[in-house]
Length: 82
Image 1 (cartoon, rainbow, N blue to C red):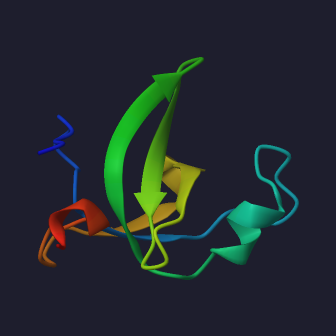
Image 2: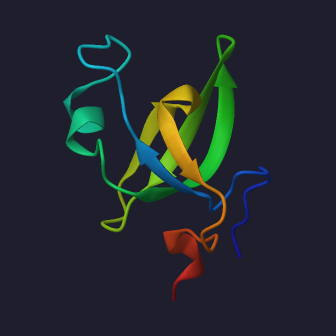
Image 3: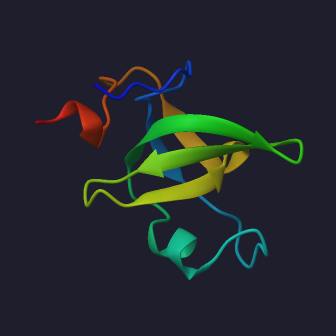
């Protein structure tokens, strides 16, 4: 079974990217406001990016600072569903 090693894996996350942020593309804005789950967090050029998976199995990267996290929700990703 595939497992990621990150303390935030499976945490419910809702992205709220800043308008017209050059770090984001149309795909990021298309998923803005939708709730997904963090798959892992990576550090790139000193910035923390989260891979967020959505119900349609799409994974989109967001800056960790632009995510509303709900750590009280049941932790899961689409990898956990058979």
